[in-house]
Length: 507
Image 1 (spheres, helix red, strand yellow):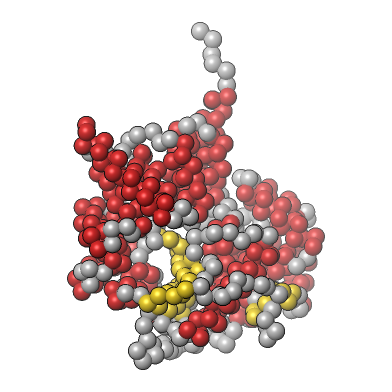
Image 2: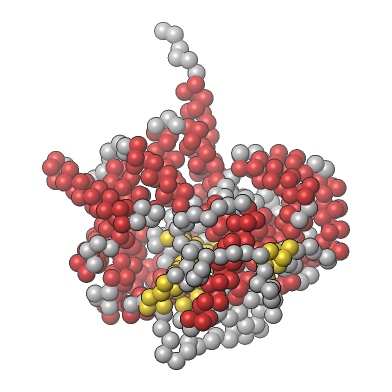
């Protein structure tokens, strides 16, 4: 999960804005987003226009063409309190986050961030978070923390101008004097993972701005990032910048001068911006807090046992609340789908299947329900034998294929189809592996499907491909059990590749 915001002084008063009288949760669909909010249609139109404009800005800045992406759900909640509750961090000052789970990628943003300063706005928070998604979706290599946050700050600090253009690269005024106060020399920042006093937001923005708006250094930055993507060490990649002493002096002069170039950019977005809307069901609306708090990432990736135990307790708490809400809305398809997903994530497969069966009884052709049921059947078939096992596997595949045909751009049915082979212990055909690749490409944030793909390619002795798909995890700048395991597997894959290339010993 990616959080945005820093711990704020305890004296800050968080003023929460109540929902308007008779407000209801609605979902508004645009070209790239699904916006879930209680705001008025006029407010949503303005909000959606800005959001689509920033998407177009990033496409123009990076050369990424428009496509049919997995649409990001944007949950617009009342204030910081709702954001903090969703991540189980009361009083943290975290003002928004981006994550992905079995329902797909999503971001949470508050309508108000009162008490955080006039430059620290909900729009800045949201655009920062969407920049994280955009980078992960289209550039899935893992970059240094300073650049990951610096790119998001560069986008987040850009502002809509009165004439409808976006001021790309406007200064991050909300960072104030932090940029100069906590400067880590570039000789250290660019070559070492251990930068204890690094302000990844402030210095990250300043350095990214400096390197982006200078033609010479922007080319060097691209070389640096490309080298990291190829598995080079930080020190090796940093040679792209030449003399780091000189680079640091130039960057310091640039930042202390306080004059930052920006470019007014005209963007063209699809019209109408809002392409459709619907009112959320009563159960779906009631479950918004639990939906944004639902996490299914591998809990073993949390390093500290105390933090891991706290996260496990929080997940159980959220599951309990969902179970309670389903009692209130026993025939609500979304409530039953969410319950099934969360039970599955917690390893409660019988309870998950019971929930999804109730859901499919209400809505038999629901894509999400069919996908989850397919996964459950595949998992159950592994403990069976004979004709019963064959029949269950066939049923799982039929469900996955039917779900895929209802929306070929949805990655989940592709994953379910692959799992109908993997979970049942059968070697998958080429089409299933290619589908898994597509699913990982569409869901780059999720390590589970990526690991399935790496392991599958390794079994097929496609070592170069396995290494390439594993590299973003192994090259992560953040220490974690997941990264260490990926690096160990990377060495094993390289050794296996080398062994496969040697001629057989003569007898």
